[in-house]
Image 1: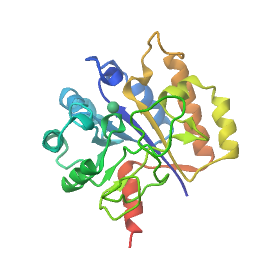
Image 2: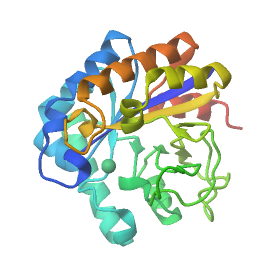
Image 3: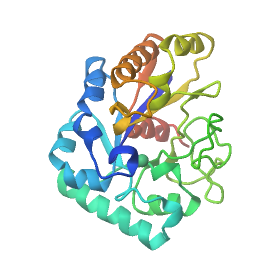
Image 4: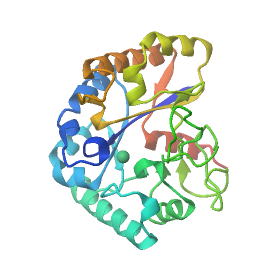
Length: 262
Ligand SMILES: [Zn+2]
C-alpha cells in the first residue's frame, strides 16, 4: 500500500507577520480536499486556535487537528521549561475546545531535537512530524539536520535521525521526488506535467505533501498566482490518487504502524 500524508501548517501569514489572511481563505485548499475525499492533518498554532476556535472546530469535522506549537517560536531558541509551557498552554486550550488531547506535533521550521521529542513523548503526544530526512538542495534549509529514514520510524533517544526504541513515532517530512520538492511553493511554481513525468518513473511507498495556510496568498515575490497553485495542487492530488496512493491523517499512520510493532 502506498501512503501519502497531506498536511497544512496553519499559522499567521508567512509565519512571521500578524495577519491571518491565509487562514481566512483556507477553504480554497480544503474544498479541493473535500471534493476528492483527501484526508489531511492541520498543524495549527495555539495563536490560531485561540483566535479562530470556531473555525478550527469546523475543520476538525473532516481533518485531524494537531499542534504546531503555541507561538511559533523556534524550539532551538527555547529551553525545556519554555517548550513545556508552550505545550501545556496549547494542550489546555485544545482540550477545552475538543475535550481530548492533541496527538501530533510539528516543530516550527522543523527544528526538533532529542530533548524535544522526549518532552512530546512525556506529554502524551503519539507522533511528531518534523524531521526533514533529505537535503532540499535548492536552498539552504535550517530545518535539515542530516539524513534520516524515509519512512515513519521509532526514533533513537540519542539520535533522532536513527531508528530506536522511543514510544513516539516520527513521520518524516518526505516531500521530495529525486530531490524535487513536493510542497506548497514548488507545486505552485513547477508545471504539473513535470510531476506527472516524475511519478511515471518513481512512486515511493511513503510520501508527504506539506503546505502552509499562506500558500494561497498573492504576493509580488511569488512566481505563481494562487489560482495556479490551487490548480496544480488539485492535479497533483488527483494524480497520486490515480497512482493508488492512500491518503491518511497523521494519527491514522500512527495507528497502522503501532499495530504492527512487536
Ligand atoms: Zn510553521
